[in-house]
Amino acid sequence: MDDVREQIEFDVLFVGGGPASLAGAIHLMKLAKSEGLNLEVALIEKGADIGSHALSGAILNPIALKELIPDYREAGCPIETDVRGDEFYFLTRTRRYGVPLIPKYMHNKGFHIISLSKFVSWLGRVAEDLGVNIFPGFAGKEVLYGQDDSTVIGVRTGDKGIGKDNTPKTNFEPGIDILAKVTVFGEGPRGSLFETISKKLKIFEGKMPQVFETGIKEVSQLPETNYFSDSRGNDIHTFGYPLGLNTHGGGFIYQMKDHRISLGLIVGLSYQDPILDLYEEFIRFKRHPFITELIKGGQVIEQGARTIITGGYYTVPELAVGGGLFVGSSASMLNAPALKGIHTSMKSGMLAAEAIVEAFSKGSFTKEALGYYHQLFEDSWLKKELYVGRNFFQAISKKGLVKFLHLGAQYLTGGRGIFDKMPIEEDSGTLASLKDVDSQLAAGYEKQTYDGVLFVDKLTGVYLSKTQHREDQPCHLIVQDPNLCVNECFETYRCPCTRFCPGNVYELEIDDKTQEKRLKLSPSNCLHCKTCDIKDPYGNIVWICPEGGDGPRYTVV
Ligand SMILES: Cc1cc2nc3c(=O)[nH]c(=O)nc-3n(C[C@H](O)[C@H](O)[C@H](O)COP(=O)(O)OP(=O)(O)OC[C@H]3O[C@@H](n4cnc5c(N)ncnc54)[C@H](O)[C@@H]3O)c2cc1C
Image (cartoon, rainbow, N blue to C red; front, side, top):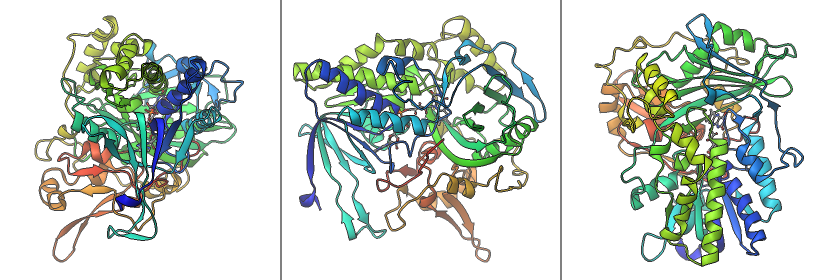
């Protein structure tokens, strides 16, 4: 197939159409113009459209946007509402308690509530107007290296029209080799190309491992008279129920326009209990009396899930390799205490753009030349934000009340805390085996009832994400050893993939007669959140991009 592959050459290629890449591409075009540089820039996105795979809370701190597009309101930036005030509650099973002192990193007054999908789609149009060649529906499948086998020279996009049996069908279209002097990887959390480069070029040497949370989120239409009808705070965060204090995470509800709300639950993937089911926890959150009252009379209109990078400063990899740069969530650019990664991702993309312009002016794209990006990062407000939260994940992932001791100490010492550089364990290593865990969930979850309107089951949630995959294609979820799943993993953890996947991709089938077990996969349900690739305790599941254009088709989340 290689001899029929088309090659296209650009100066700069951005992989992924999220806030990091798009802000980077926009800033690059503007800077290049002001420097009199004529750059050919391309951006590929695996979603069918720019914004189809964008899911977030989302409260936008506009600091980076103001730098990028100072007149963003006049320029048509889609803002749902502005934050009027914050509400923060500790939830028990039946009650809520207002937290009297909301930490300052959670003060969002004046920030904007947006739909990330709409926001990113708008950034895409701005980038296109500036001359960026945007290719939605193209998944980067393989990193291309130069003769030295360590300089990135571009990306091969995935073939289309390969059947389940791995042979080309009549609709076969070979992937394209997109070559570039600089390739910027902005694939978001757990990028599949980023994973291969990080192993090959060892960009995490001496760093802590990246860690993640998974957020399940939906947008609901509420009746005209609702909780937010008066002028109270329109940005609500909760902690406590249903996760308790041993699993970190919490809920959020943000007011959008036209009586819509954005509601979600975030669960730290460092959790230990193998029986924990992310979707069940999400529904339990919605069943809390406070939340149930708040969403009364509403209807879920879109749902989805995505992972969030949370490790912070000590998990930032080397930011440059020969011919390549890493931006956004792929490079751990998220302010974890504030739960905000949009502005930090945008800024990292913009700093990368500045380093690229410098590299073009010098005509050098080596690791050292592009490493100027790291220096720009270290001198920026972005580094300061990440540095203050450098031990935050380590504190919140502690069990019980001890986390508050660490958090308090960090709050008073500018992030240093009781001791600095607290260690981090990879999420795949934190599950306790069934026999060792005192699981409150051991007996399973109470059976839920779903009305299909305000409380929807997992499969309806997948339907509401508008996820589609062409059926006749090789499975993009590689289970390397299926026997390991039904034997050792079943015995030790009862196949936790069937519970941590929010898309119902993994199901355990047990034959009534023979008791033979089989892990059944429905890859067409996959929401591209990548939780399975991260949390599988054996590293037995590998997530690779399916055909470009497949996956969720978010429009408002
Ligand atoms: C539930 C939830 C709530 C959140 N709340 C907030 C909030 O309130 N405020 C805030 O600031 N942040 C929030 N975040 C975090 C924020 O969404 C991220 O930090 C931010 O979107 C990261 O931007 P990014 O460009 O790095 O990656 P992403 O937004 O993930 O974009 C990456 C893009 O790359 C594409 N892609 C990936 N791999 C490939 C490939 N190989 N080829 C082609 N395309 C590819 C993906 O489809 C995606 O469109 C939240 C996140 C979640 C999940």
